[in-house]
Length: 346
Ligand SMILES: NC(=O)N[C@@H](CC(=O)O)C(=O)O
Ligand SMILES: [Zn+2]
Ligand SMILES: [Zn+2]
Image 1 (cartoon, rainbow, N blue to C red):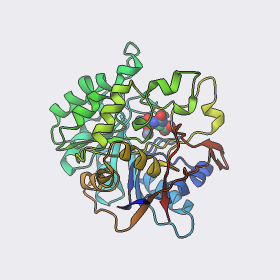
Image 2 (cartoon, helix red, strand yellow):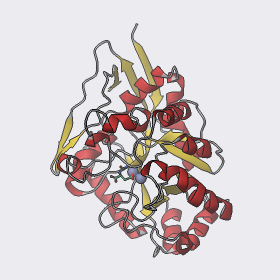
Image 3 (cartoon, protein in one colour):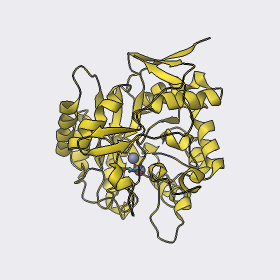
């Protein structure tokens, strides 16, 4: 019997599209299945002001393939120089849907991020007042803190104190990777979390056992198996606090396969078939639509998408390209390491 599943068209609540030649190469991969995406602002230089976000949005729309319908939901990169009035104007015009907190030094292009939260309190207070979500890269950068503990320490020493100080602030914990993140986000209310495709599939062994696998290296780094299992339970629970943010983060192969390799997994191409596989394994195919298409719009106070996509399970495994070839160079597509029988049918 052929299995199939029709879902509201999904959205990606955490996506890196980059710019220029890379943008041209990766945008069609997302626009094929997703109706909207929250666009991360960590360009070089970062997207800090409303004017920069408007210009970036225009470049994304100009890069869309003919006939594609895709809406980029723009974000601003929070700096210690960010002007609360500029943020409020960009939000009120409908252009900007969230502000992104990168602790300085935590991840790709985060050096312009925040060192001292006190310096950005006026911006956060304005955001709390107007209901604009703060998306957090939730890792501390303190050199003494082990890289595998950085998320849990961020929750205890940065996020929880911030939420006590400013309880009205709406927060999305981006790309959670730990059972601590799952538990904290599960409180719901004005708190939610995105979960990536790859963190539902790999644990830290996949990165390190049998030789180092640079294409499985991302930040926050994948943790031990018990954390992956907690993420799977969260994603398939139907709890509205959890929704899909792929964190698809393209880097050219030359920079991934490098003595100091870049962090990021590129999952835009095959996320929906991979999620169908994961949700089927968890006997939760009926919860996939909530995760990929309903919970995110509810948190962001946006309508759900009108269209649908159809996932079909075939006897023969789906074939995904090993790489996509952009004008910036080849980008390796995330390889789950097992056959996937689900296809998106167009
Ligand atoms: N996730 C990653 O490993 N990399 C992201 C940055 C980020 O989301 O932290 C990137 O921009 O490459
Ligand atoms: Zn991040
Ligand atoms: Zn990211």
